[in-house]
Amino acid sequence: MPALPNLNIVPFISVENMMDLVLNVGVENFLTELSAYIEADFRRWEAFDKVPRIASHSQEGVIELMPTSDGTLYGFKYVNGHPKNTRTGRQTVTAFGVLSDVDSGYPLLISEMTILTALRTAATSAVAAKYLAPEGADCMAIIGNGAQSEFQAIAFKALVGIKKLRLYDIDPHATERCAKNLSGMGFEIIRCQSSQEAVEGAHVITTATADKQNATILTDNMVGPGVHINAVGGDCPGKTELHKDILLRSDIFVEYPPQTRVEGEIQQMPADYPVTELWQVISGLTTGRTGNTQVTLFDSVGFATEDFSALRYIRDKLAGTGLYENLDLLADPDEPRDLFGMLLRREVSRKATMRNSIPNG
Ligand code: NAD
Image (cartoon, rainbow, N blue to C red; front, side, top):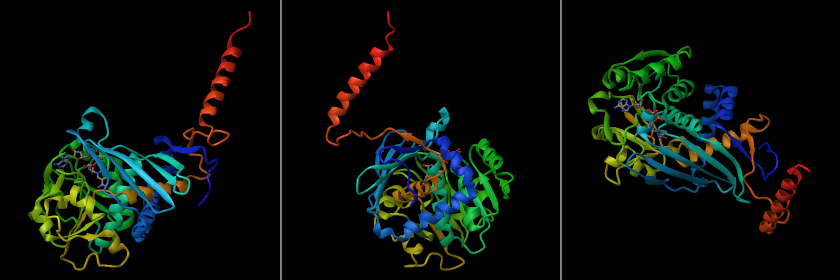
C-alpha cells in the first residue's frame, strides 16, 4: 500500500477533494474499481468483526454508527437518514468515516462519506446484480429518483450492462433532474408516470425511495417472472418499500442477516425466514440465480464492510494526488506521556507570541 506522509498528521478528504478524486478517476471507472474492492472484501467475509450498526432513532430519522475490522485495519462510518431533510434544502443521507491502523489504534484517514456512500451503495447493488440479475438484462426501472439514483444507474451500466432506464418519482422534478444529469451518458431514458409504468419491460427494478414508513412502492402484480429487484430504500425499522407477497415469491439475498432482519424488507417476515447471504454467492459457496423465471431480491440495507472497502479504496487512490488536507488531529508531545507538559509549553509559546505582538513604546 503506498505510504502517506507523517503518521501524526491525519489526511482529511473534504467533499471538494472527494469530488475531484472521483472526477479524476472517472465516475464509471471509480464505481468499477470500488466494486472490485467491495467484492474482494465480501470474499473474505469471515475475516471481519461484524456487528449490526448502532442506531439512534428519533421521530424524523436515524443516526447510525457502522464499525468493522479485518484485524489489520479498523473502519467506521457515521451516517444519518432523515427523509424530510430535503424539504429544507438538506440531504436525506450524510456521512463521514474513519479508517485506522489496528496495531497502533491511530487513524489513517478521515473522509467525507456522503458522496462515497452513494458510490458504495450503487457499487454494492451492482455487484449483487452481477450474480442475481437475469442474463442479458439491459433495462432497469428506478423508482425514487433522488440522491442515490444516478449513481445506481451508472454502476448498473458499468457492471451489468444496463442501457435503458425507466424513471419514476412522486416528484416529477426529481425525475427530470435525474434524466438531465444522465443525459449524454449512453442511456435510453424513459420518464414514467407511475411505478406500474416504470416496471413494464424492466429486467431489474431498483427502489430507492425515502419515506419513514412501511410504504408499498411495489405490489406483487407489478413483478413479473425472472426479474431482479434491487431494494435500496427500506433500511430502517418501520421503513420498507415492498409488499410482503413479493417477498414470499422471491429468493432473498442479504448482506448481514442480524442487521437486515431488523432493518430490511424482511423485517416483515418471521425471524427465521430463509435468506441467502450475499458473501456466500460471491464466494461460490452457493448459487445466486438458478433459472429464468426466478424472482431474485437483493434486500440492501448497507453494511459496515462496504464502507470499510470504500475507505480502503480511497486510501489506495489518494497517495500522490494531493487531494487531502493534513488534519492536526492527534496530540504529539515530544515525550509520549508528557501530555500535560505539551500544554504548558504551548502556554509559554503563546505568552511569547503575545509579548512580541505588543508594539514598542
Ligand atoms: P432522497 O431523499 O434524495 O431521494 C428519495 C426520492 O424518493 C425522492 O426524490 C422522493 O420524492 C422519492 N419518493 C418518496 N416516496 C416515493 C414513492 N412513494 N414513489 C416514488 N418516489 C418516491 O434519498 P436518497 O439519498 O436517494 O436515498 C433513497 C433511500 O435509500 C433512502 O431511504 C435512504 O435511506 C436509502 N439508502 C439506502 C442505502 C443502502 O445501503 N441500502 C444507502 C443510502 C441510502
